[in-house]
Length: 512
Image 1 (cartoon, rainbow, N blue to C red):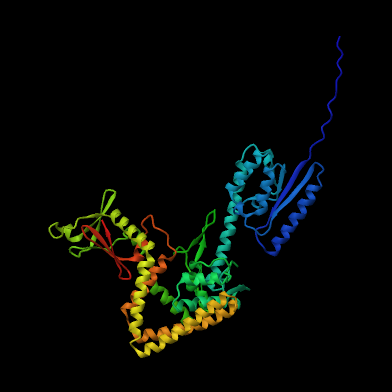
Image 2 (image 1 turned 90 degrees about the horizontal axis):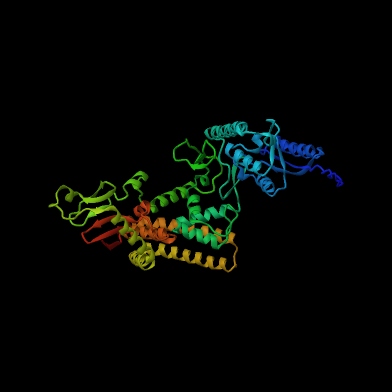
């Protein structure tokens, strides 16, 4: 009979659970910071006191919102370590500390369960490792989300009450200011930059040119970036009422529902204009002059609704009878038809034309103009400037003023060369340029008063605007109503061609 010897199994040593904790506070107040420190101390001691547990680390986000998970660095690091198999269990004080968004909460817990990681919520007495259903977690997660919405609404109410009473100015300071004790205070290092922008614009420079100059001078913008100043940044500075000591608050607002989004306030909520809310750094007469110049340089835009629905309204004229073309939708197609032809074909033989054909003709004209702006618009501008100078030199009073302007412009060019070569620093350059630009603007105002209304000057200004519009433009593939309104004054339709009359008086023909 065979003999059997039983070999007893070696008792497997119990494997310790690798336990980590996650803590978060959602405000930077002193009480919350104390709560943060308390959570850190508590979980460190609690995990290390369990013999069957192995401390796997403490993950903590301080003074960060919990409404979305992607804003919490340590939370993301915790998930990464769980995916790497470094953690078996997570301890959290409450669901509201873990996530205030039900979707984020459920998605995260589901992923952790698939990874074999349990989450224990102390306040709710909930352990996902023992759950047979996600119903309870969903309910509690929704409650946490409502708590977050309630806190957000309370904060918004507080902000809006302070706006209404004039106690709230801004959460961040624009360039030229620092925010101290909830008040904007001029920053001596940045004030000259703001003055340079306003004075340069009044002296005749465009926003693209000013942005390029500041980039070349390596002047720091508000984000501390010296690489590039954008033209939109210059435009926003020129329009900002804070530089005269006033504040328009609630220009933007945060939506009421998760996920929270910042939106431009286009009348959805009241705005509040607070006069003398802080010390201004730009004289009000300079600011108002800039606003007038901005308005003058901006071409007439049709109301937004009209641009979207009927961008060609009142812009298409008949080349045979002079009547206006009217919009005539038919099924899915839109045509434009001469008013006289619409009444009676005998009155005008010019036939209806499809809207798409007009759009395509404009695209061809625009892209040709973009490709040849130097040979067309710049050449035209040079001729106009020569004509303007010739007219001005016929008057002794204008000659003297223009000579002073020319001398100041030469000084600015010399300053630019010296600054580029490193002979003078940026602070001295800006201070002297500001002084020269102020004098140039004063002299140009005097010239305008002496000249009075001048058609050549108007055409010069509109040609400069067209060049500035096309300076950073890209080829257009689809019809853009706002660009069309900015460039084209009217279209005259002939049976064999279009005539595009641009805002500066230039006429361009395009075949049909």
